[in-house]
Each structure stands twice: as C-alpha cells, then as structure tokens.
Image (cartoon, rainbow, N blue to C red; front, side, top):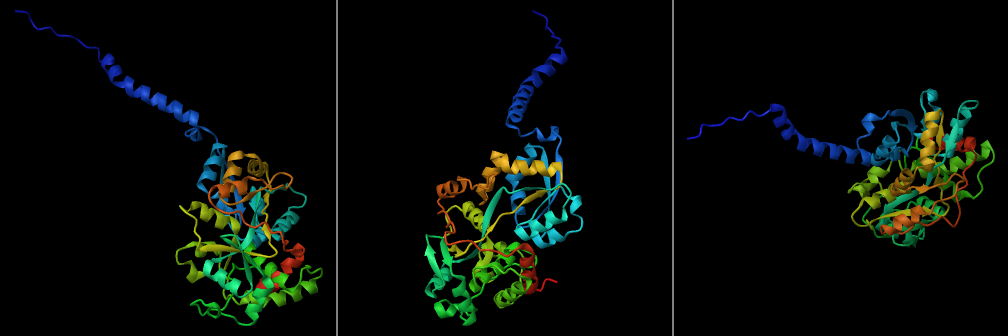
Length: 371
C-alpha cells in the first residue's frame, strides 16, 4: 500500500495563475481605451477658459462639444447673460472671451477693448425667425400676410402684419378657435438680440432705408413701439416655451433663432410638420462674434474655425458654418436634407438693413424703455 503524497505549491505561483487572466484583459482594455482617446483626459492638463455667452451658449453647453473641447485640452466655463448686459458688464477683463449675438453688442465690446488684446472670430451664423404652428401660418396666408414656401417654411409680409395689428384682427377672424389678437411674442429687446431684431423687422414696414440721424431713429422707434408693446410683458428666450407640447398656449408666434428650430427637428424621430417657420421678406442673420481677450480665447476661436469635429457639430446643432473669409459652407444644406428636412429659404428678397450700432441702440431705448 502506497503512502499518501503531499505536494507543496508555491503560493506566489498560485497567485500568478489566478491574477494573470484578468491582468491580461485589463491591459488589453487599457490599450483600446487609450487608442480611442476615452481616458486620456485625466492624464492631460486641462485649461479652464471663462467666457460670457448670450443666446449661442447652447453650443458650448452641448455635451458633444464639451467632449471635443476636453479632448483638445480645454474646458469652457459658461456664464449666461443677455447681449446688451454682456456689452455693459464692468468686469470684461476677467474673462478669456465673450460671445454676444449681434452687431450692436459686438461693436460696443470692441470699442471698450480699444488698445487691448481683442481678436474676433465668426464661426457661423443663424437667421432670426418667427416660429409658429401650421394652422396659424395658414391663417396668415388667408389674411394675405404670408405665402407658403415648401413644407415647413413661409414668407411673412411685415407691412401686412402691421395692417392686421392696426385693424385689431384676431385669430378667430380667420377660422381659428382663438380669441386673441394677432401679434408676435419676443424676448425683451433691451436684453436679448432676437427681441431687438423684431424691432428691425417691424421697422421695414415703414421703409427700407435705415435712419441716419438720432431724430429719425427716435421717430422710427416711436412708430414701431406699439407693435412691440402689444405682446405685453416681454419674457426670456422664447424657444423653450415654443417647443414644449403645450407650446400653442404659450406663444402662437415666437421670435427664435433658426438653429434652435433645426436642432429641434433633427432630434425628432420624424419631422414635426405642425411646427413651422415664418421668414420675414427681409431676413436678418445673427452672426455672433467670438471676441477673444487672451491667448486662451484665441485658441478656442481657432478651434471653432478650424476643427472638423466642432464645425460638424455646429451643423448638427443647426448653424450655418462660415469660413475665414466669411464664405458660407455647403455642409448645412447637405446635412439637413440628408435627414429629411427641406433647406430653408435663402432670403433672396433681401436683408434687414439695421441702423448703425449707436442709432439702433437708441431705437431700442425708445421701444423697450431700456434706460
């Protein structure tokens, strides 16, 4: 009979036999993640850039934009503020860059920065539009104030709209179960550029030439004021109220930016054919400027102009990209039509000619009683 044998196993070997397979899996996974660029962030220095933003802050608050910038080594800290308040903010020097929405704020900021580091970048533009619902757009067609332009877009005649306002017309006059007057709702023109642009739209009903003197600007503002005042208390950004399911109860016609509408449609599983856009015969494009005050701000501006991923994401968020020389990229139309959206009208009938910055600012003071 054989005696039992006892084997002595080296505990270090047993440990290695147990640990080697998961270690191999970990190493392979680590290599894959490093190659994909998903975990390099914690090992890379990140520069925090502080900026003031008006209505285009939704671009920098987009999660994909944040990830792209983080991969480039930057994190943008967003401080939201209206364009006019931005231009007047006393501590501009404490920010790396600002991003107002319109030419009045742009010019005011650059004037304040005279003699200091200031570099403007124009990465994209978006038209200011009037968003409504199909039955209300069709009512305006019936009233002679709008014409249909494709499936989702209409052209709006501002002079006819002012006539409807003067005649105290109501939606019920055109077959809709709504007792309210026909009017447009916008943000406060003293604070938001889209609200200020509505002043410009109504001004076209009184003539095509912008005023050239303070006296003429004040008179035109007094002519426009009743149509802006008719909406009552002006609110903030109108887009959130327009896009909710009960949007009709908040704003029948709301002044928003085209990119907000396009981005909304691209998020839907199918095109929302109930929500449509009104384009005034004379359009206005908001061309926000990223105005840099520092080298860090310069770098963000350069990325906005050059980085393929950021520029593609801008298109996906509804913006029309611009090149260094101001040329319009072809990406926008190709992208949205590939997603089933018709390309918006290009504004062949003309553009709103806004007055010089100081005169337009005076108009806003009169219309909105800003000061």
